Image 1: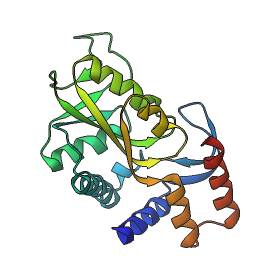
Image 2: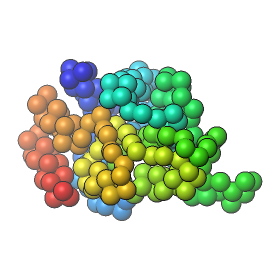
Image 3: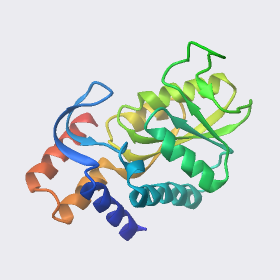
Length: 202
């Protein structure tokens, strides 16, 4: 699995899923690096490897659930295909309640007592997952776990722990940048600037 992680990290880098510069994240936080997984579904080979990483993690860790929930919008293609591969029902949470039709925030069939695994692409502050969990619990669902490809290690794990949700990740940002540096894909300066930013948020 370790070698598979290294190869997946390298593919993410070569496909420009990680960039250096100055960026404003969706959380409003300024960052020196940007992790863009929205392009992954546009690259079938990489998409397949990412989905397999999710499914293998879920099976190997024995996470208990009977439904998978994606978070709009970046988490939807990932979560839907993971659910399909695992033979589990898929639901998703909108960013906000729709103002027409049935005016729902959660789309799909849910019921009280459903055990839901939340899947997203990247976790930064964790607020999007936090909001989704609250909406699911309001409908009577049980949510104990959330899984992302990358945890930027900037508060999400701690926020979700405060509502008894375990945040799992295929990579932490620190792991990604360590692989990039060890494989000579980024400079020492880029590596250290990324690590400093991560540690400043801990």
